[in-house]
Length: 434
Image 1 (cartoon, rainbow, N blue to C red):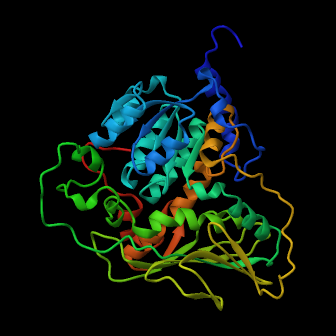
Image 2: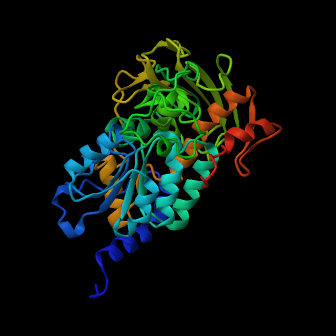
Image 3: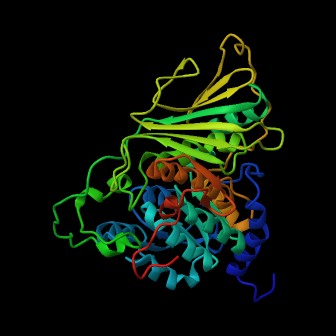
């Protein structure tokens, strides 16, 4: 290393060398490594955080071994708390100002409401910053495609915050399915009993609290009066900011069949639910996806259920309030975050798991830190999580237009359904462009 080759040059060069691999690789290829706390100051990443509380605090706590160099929040109370923990960090209310001043940053973590994700993430990637973004990756289908393309173009290390993907149980399930234990799978059911939805726009227009920068919170979303019902988490119910339960949870649970069956983009999507409310997501939704055959694998029908639409039985088996059921030629497999079971039980009573083929994770955040520094692939890079997010958001598109979508993934259009366009590519408030 020459005298003029700086630490930042090293981080950017080494990551660029491996990031192109990361856009095409789904599984990690490294072994366990020592904890990141052993990093010397010169080896630590300089990270900026867009969002500092709630889910953002979870990421901060998992990345304390690095240098928290900048923090941004629209709530001054949250921002002050983060500044108290990291007194050397620069502070911002507007993530655009953080990015304007980001010359010293190596990476950015985006942990905001969904409608901000694409803007903060795209801005950081265009500046050559590595990005960790919470799920869903974006608020719309077209944004997910754009972010995946930007990440590939700029060759940065990326990771979507589907933390359960790093768990040993998910890896075991993928190994079992891919070993052929239940034969080829042509049907999957995925369900989560949450119900982010319902309600109408508040009629009251209380004053904005002095600690909240409401216009910055709205960002590219349509202008509307402040109301405390939106914060801190209830925004998920509202189309302008979130996408209900499917947007909240499908990137976690549908991730498992997406990974195990090597799915990509669906060919058709059809949804069932209550009459569409123009303001809020439904309290229960069913979405039917069809995926084409892949290599030697058959076409797959995947059904998502949430809220009051979840089943009590799947394929004749009683099931809990959340999980995944794979239906194969020779049996079924149930899985959730921490367990799995094969059916018929009598057939599989002496079943032995296959040899480990997927290296156990060093931790979801640590995967990303390692990728930033060394260019190694992450397991939920945007080349993988972009298509996953597209599929998730297409469920809401199909529901809102009220008809089956024949999906053309190449052109990002629903054939013969021009009314879907407004949901595939959302309109932004004046002054905001992506």
